[in-house]
Image (cartoon, rainbow, N blue to C red; front, side, top):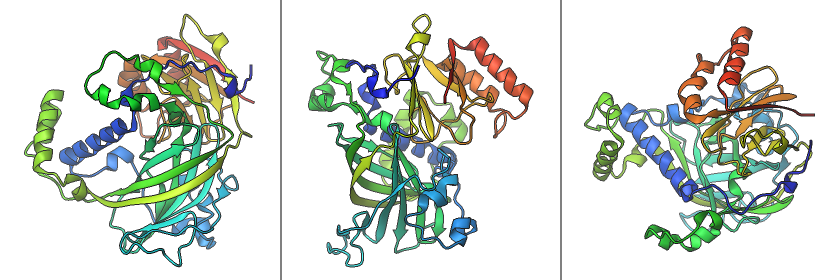
Length: 431
């Protein structure tokens, strides 16, 4: 049975905790970077698995297309939410808004573009935008007057203000794309709207009380979910661009990798506090950091043409299941019974496409969202699996190789394994 997403009743009480805020997410990213650097001395290669290559072999480059205005088309194969991006994005037209350069605080006479901003010799140009009910996709070019060092695709730290949510939002996606030349990176970033609808403005009003350990608040009732309208405005600030060096200087942690891995959580925290106090500039040594802000104002129109939502309430069994599943052009999201895509309780959602292949989680979103890429999604199998069982056992049964299972018999056996071990299963068909 089909239905509109706006028809799904969203309760005011959500099983979401304050720790899901962007501040905590950024701190976790920072901790992972720090440990990866100390233990391996190699920046973020494993964390982001970014592949950087020269793009002149790309047919679009060979045809000498102007990059700005065509980044969706040129870079679509570099994106974790793959698909045909040609012709779907709205090109962000140039008009008057002066660029900013903190070096002399004067506008750039050759840079009067609404979607181009320059700070300290680094120019960010927003190229195209596409939006559905689940995500905002932006393409951008980053150009530096000075040549970029040998680094991985840059990470973009943002602050966002959506007109449909009074809460300040933030994100830190990696630019999915490639290095075009020594001075230029280009690619796409994605903002997951399922994460942007959480309204914590009432929580923010009592932030000081929370820090002091106040317990006389019903925090769940103070957190609400908003709706994504068909048109909205987005004030986007890029606070920082971070490029992790491919060959950073190897730090001396004073401990072997084995000693670090054997530490308890408490021992690790104590060790890191002491190490960080002794090495306050560690982040600057493992990365090239460009500080903004680069400020942009966007008017966003939602494309509903490819959106299909299926109500799954009738398929709930023994209080376990999904409330709905939503399919758009590039992604599929399942919603828990509390209608909140950020929380599935003790279970992990697992999706198989029509051929029984495990659907992958694109970067920049929650685990309830999978990338369609080239999958056949005419039929999708939905599973809820105990989180520990999935993460510590069953997931490894698929990823026995870098490419996952490829033999048809193994793929069928994996599906049967999920059927045997899952807490819940249902099948949905899309048009």
